[in-house]
Length: 106
Image 1 (cartoon, rainbow, N blue to C red):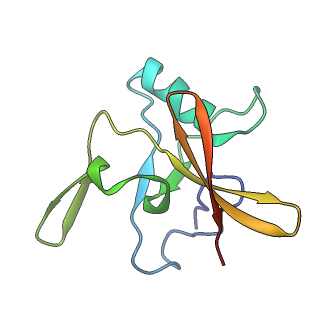
Image 2: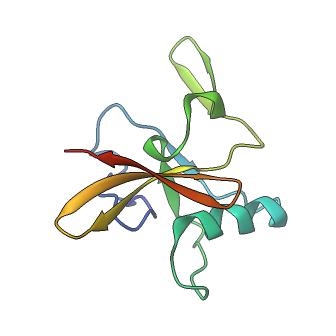
């Protein structure tokens, strides 16, 4: 079972209900680099053919939903990540290269 590639995320394909999982856009090198930069991993990390991100890391506007079928838009960029800080968890939004902390979440 694949694990979401976001550093602090524990979502697993086939185990975590209510989430969709999305492959990295390897067909679009420029978009792939944006996805990788948003993850906050080391500069040497590269996704494997099985690496995925769960739907928690995308805004609703990144998806097209038709009935029960969910498709990620071809230009979607992950923007929602959790950052573990000093004894607290914060939701971090990345926008235009800036990081905004929205406060504590439980």
